Amino acid sequence: MAKICDIEADDIFLKGKQQKRVKVRSLFCFWAVRELGISLTEIAGRLGISVSGVGYSVERGEIIARNNDYQLIE
Image 1 (cartoon, rainbow, N blue to C red):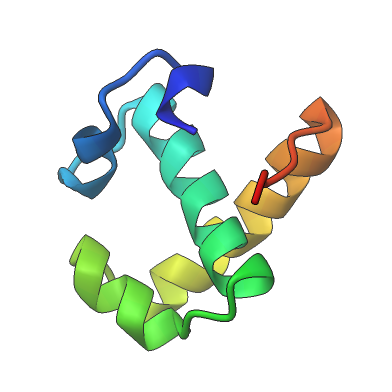
Image 2: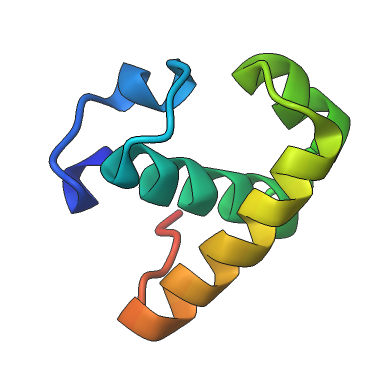
């Protein structure tokens, strides 16, 4: 996933609103919540953001995945 935006995988967990990081974090939230069934609360704790912030990220991630035909590979 981090390869999509050319960032290090651990950068997803760093604070900040850099465009690349937000894109990858949004995809992470979307796939974690919708595809893997991880709770918003758990993701929020892991990323250090609010539950509502994760909710917005899930919505953004869904749009990014759909518009770019990205799929989670199992």
